[in-house]
Image 1 (cartoon, rainbow, N blue to C red):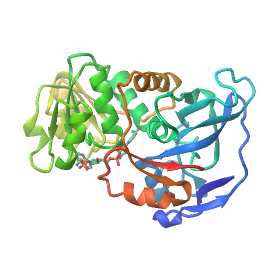
Image 2: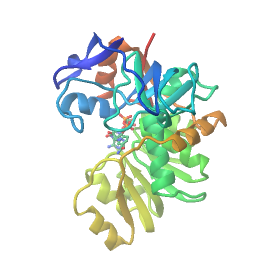
Image 3: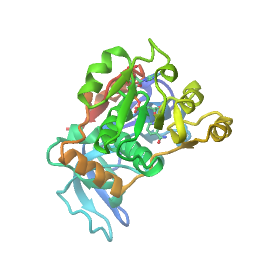
Image 4: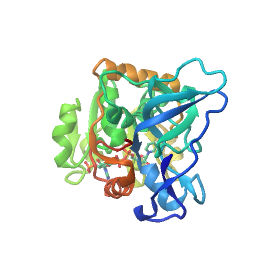
Amino acid sequence: MRAIRQEVLGGPEVLREVEVERPEPGFSQVLVKVRAAGVNPTDWGHRAHGIFLGPPPFILGWDVSGVVEATGFGVTLFKPGDEVFGMLPYPFGVGSHAEYVVGPARAFAAKPRNVDHVQAAALPLAALTAWQALNDTARLRSGQRVLIHAAAGGVGHLAVQIAKARGAYVIGTASANHHDLLGELGADEVIDYHAQPFDEAVSGIDVVLDPISGDYSARSLTTLKPGGILVSLLPFAPETPAAAERLGVKAELMLVEYDHQGMTAIADLVTEGKLRPVVAAAFPLAEAAKAHALGETRHVAGKLVLTVA
Ligand SMILES: NC(=O)c1ccc[n+]([C@@H]2O[C@H](COP(=O)([O-])OP(=O)(O)OC[C@H]3O[C@@H](n4cnc5c(N)ncnc54)[C@H](OP(=O)(O)O)[C@@H]3O)[C@@H](O)[C@H]2O)c1
């Protein structure tokens, strides 16, 4: 099969299209013929720095939308021909930037019929992150006020919609050119973080979702009401938990996990018309390097996706 592999760490130019052995599904696994695969910041992070995976060679990609080709021993959830989407076990189950990939059956859910594979591939990692942060970690409830940083980004634009579907009052931070989009997605207020410090603009927040970290962690804590929670997607400074305790709030760091129930909840929201991925651009698999280079600008609204013929 064709796959995008790298032999060394480096810039987008280290990504090479190569022929490799097609994987076989093991116990409880499915082999999926990839139709489209999302690209996430963790892809370009691993490409450049190895992070959790260590030194290459490796094939990147955690997001998948495609068709079940074969099932391994004991799989009952899916059969060959089923259209599925999902996130491979993060971080070591990687490898969807290829024509085929194997993963646990329970990493997948049935692809909603009202989206195509490109749209479906834009969802798994980013939507699961937003879902697990807001639903599982913060236990967001109707009527609560939520502040979502990088609200136009891959995670952010889905978090805005998930929070709205929960009945929350949603405030996002984004550059001014993304404010109209966020209004269309349901944000109640949008702060241009270039024009105004967000921590001077908002207060009385129940939940902050923060994909930025750095000085955003401490500043976000001050926007929370007592009992509120900061959910950070990147490690925060070691003094953050103590600062949170002094303010009577919580600070949690979360790492996304593969999650059949979460994927099913996401599929239901898509089917109900409450969640729609914004695909900023789609590139053929062979042009993965272009997707990485665009993503690394850090100012894409929505998601980047690779398509597999
Ligand atoms: N812990 C986990 O499991 C987990 C899971 C998913 C993602 N993450 C991490 O979360 C981060 C975001 O992921 P993503 O997929 O959403 O990334 P992304 O799509 O690349 O985010 C791009 C967005 O970030 C916004 N942005 C950049 N700097 C900003 C700032 N200072 N304030 C507010 N917005 C800013 C940009 O908004 P404007 O163009 O409007 O300025 C842009 O729309 C990444 O670092 C990723 O590695 C962690």
